[in-house]
Image 1 (cartoon, one colour):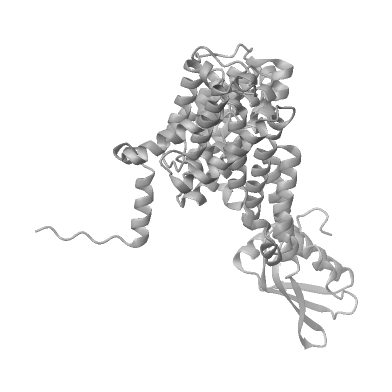
Image 2 (cartoon, one colour; image 1 turned 180 degrees about the horizontal axis):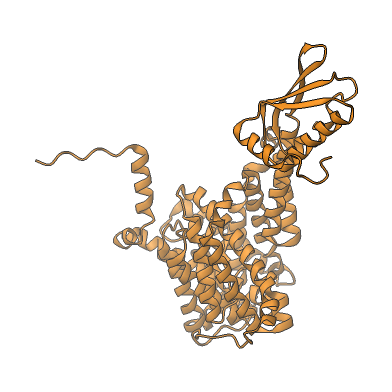
Length: 509
């Protein structure tokens, strides 16, 4: 008789259940979950069309370049990415980065830059750059999410200016459907119902309102393999490299931040290293099919994960396939979709993305002012520049400075003993690094102290060369007064750093 299998712990069962929930095979065996994945992919595809066209216009290229990029990115990342159910496509952040290159040098140079950016992202992934995500504080993450919600909302405003008055009640009706329909049924995603209902009303009553076809021409053929027609010279590399590196960094940052957000929403873990090189490989593929490149899209990802409830790679793959079918095979029909319907969907995505808890008065009163400052700086810079990378970098820098300032105040110099008339013992308490050690030099009585001074560092730690330079300056000041300062109590790491650097740092004396 076989021995009974050991029971799984609750944590183990929970992890296994979540892994199975993200399995394509499990979704294919479950009609209900399969419907969720299929409809989620369809809604995302519909929402991608005007976005991709708009981003193409920002980048200064034909709409087909953005649409094909969205197709190839979504399909490729479905297989290569490290985060299930996340949507990657042409994005505004990438469009802003590459627009000057397209304007000054043309499409071929842009495509070459996309391919090079993909290669750089693969290298970053292999080198483990994705692990740097652990250094992004929670307050920066909250600022990232809130800024993204604001940008998604602001991107809808141009579609609400200079339009017929009927557009406004249509948007309101679409929002009402998305809000209230889930209370009655969740069989079909509410955003899809809203899009179909408003399209039917527009066509049925012959309403003259802006629609998808007004955003630009849709492609009539499949994407074809394309090798950019640029000279393989160092001069070409000099032209495209700055844009490629900027694109690689912006794309990776936005993708990894979005992956972390989806991790939190779904209570699952994603492989950030795989996501990094997967984004790179997807961009290389996209470049060779004439696309403008891209990265993860927070808005469409939220539609897929929160709005539709999708959890597998199937929804991501189908989003790309449906997009191609819609724009190539059903372009005339898709062109009839009123922009009011898509605006309603994206407004609700913005509302659902924003972390409302973070701005409640009770939260702001409880939260340290430094944390709030980090969150606000991330939001403000992102919204002003329309660049998520700038906002995140600013937030991380502000957080680091706030942390350094806070920790610097913890360092103290204490007069602890006078063994004899010629000796005084100081104890330095706290972590010693560039922010805390710079003021250390002013906390000793060089004139009034006796001939022998002992500086006990047993309750501190030397973290950097700035601290060693400061200690050198202290001993030098005592020596200038004809006195001897001795440093004791160093732990192994501090002793190794001090022994290696002491007396060899310029400007220490």
